[in-house]
Image (tube, rainbow, N blue to C red; front, top):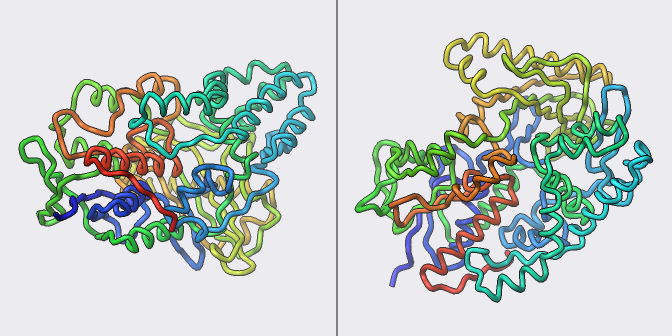
Length: 501
């Protein structure tokens, strides 16, 4: 009997991960990708001798203490990709010149907060205790929750109880929690010390710093495209096939069952099952022509916010800037106008000095700033000249701010590369240029149950990735992919198996 043939749309981390796990379990899979290389937004590109990176700042599971470490080994990411775990996870430069260290070690982080706000020691110790609860937890995520028996649930509840209780206790918005501090300095600067969307729950602050405390939130020494290519190699070694430059135009449906795809020029590819691991809106409203929607799906796309649109300014410097932190947030007094309605007073910077990214004695910087998708979309469609002018203006203002803070930036720049939300949309079809799916905010979490992997009245079809959960990131979509492979195995009465590369 022939194995079931499964077509996967999209060769991002989600698509290749689900492909790997399905190949491990005897399925015949093919991945179709519109771009000339794999990875989606987990990618890098070269310009003027510099490598610019867009996908990976740090990776949960880089260290042995986190269960994701095992999963990354199954996918061939570890040990191929090397990581470093810095003493300071991120440095924060505030407007008044104050420097705050977000230490990876929870004890050092607690001491840093107390240094600035001794009057808040009790509250700071609460944060510290929550971080330690999470970092000392050992969640077993091997089995998909959708397949839990009652006994599985009871065992998970017993082992994960303190973890889940802590996450629940910290379901308070960052901006609201900031008002709990007695210290005026911390109250005013907390959202800059940890620069997530201020409407995001504090639980994400706790989780991120707990992963750092575990030594499982490392910075990659390799580029994002190398991580993507590591999974591609694993997938192809398992017998999977990737077809590049093959954009999918239509998901073919017969009798309410997905039966294959049509790629460019109308070429038909048959499948027993189709998995979309690409943009949700494109899948539902273009590839399926909006035929399989209900009130929940309409509500999601009408009401949930995608993650904040971003601009990435990449700079190639002909000087080694190892004096600059690897990852930092910089606040400044003179704001930058990034759209008609958005002005920013801080941005994030990644510094790359190792030879994976740059020639010896040089550096590259990636600056990430918030903006509005519709502003850039309108310029791109209606005024290409102003679109280019605005990109250069913002790059110039960013360079001036960096030069004022660190000196000798402007006079060493050899390459400038600017990506707007339209760039991300054109490259991956991502809805409204959002790179991490739905925004992590209260409204999204309340309505998360409306987000599903299956569509109404359509069989032999699944969606997976950033648009089928709230709160994206590579680890989240990798776990989703692994769980989906388990679900498919269960439907086919197969025992799921995953092996380390």
